[in-house]
Length: 250
Image 1 (cartoon, helix red, strand yellow):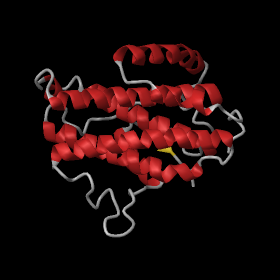
Image 2: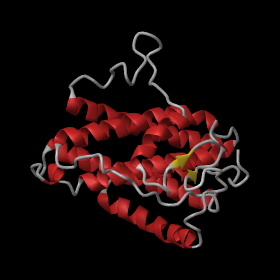
Image 3: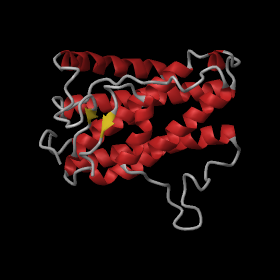
Image 4: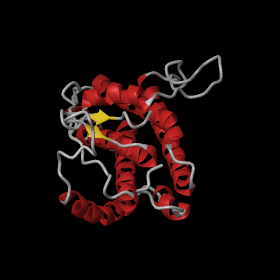
């Protein structure tokens, strides 16, 4: 585990944002509290700094607990950016106000933004010199005007997120801080799994336990993917200079 992490982090304090009911006012209070400190931090960072990566132009997430947090922060950035753009597309704006599908997309947007801000705040607090920069997405392959394209991409992102958390937990440190991060990650992945389930049901009712996400007929566990497998997919939705180098998580 990286020495950049503070030892013995308080679990109750660290996970507090995850326990707050998702209400717009609470969200903006939380987001506002973290934005200032993060902006100050990032203003002192070189955008070309990839934390010592040997892969020029890529963003190195690092290793150990810091690497896992940066990795999760990167994926939450991608998901939050996706739902942000969904809400400007003609598919979303054409949905009836108050419709179930619009409310679901709104909920997922708020959840993912909260997750992104949560990791940003945690990294700023515990590993401020190692936090990765804001990433630039590339959603040029997604048609935000059609239901099939938007929900198909949402399904891909949510399934990827669940498998990523499942596959990365083993890289967290085994000290108190690492165990606290594991608790927080466990809470977030449970939310991501519900996201995946409801999006999959919107596309095809009863598909949330299909064999492409769960080991049906064997152990019944959710499928996990290695950081390199996840990065290979995530990088197709990130611009050059924002693509992930996860070689520290092996």
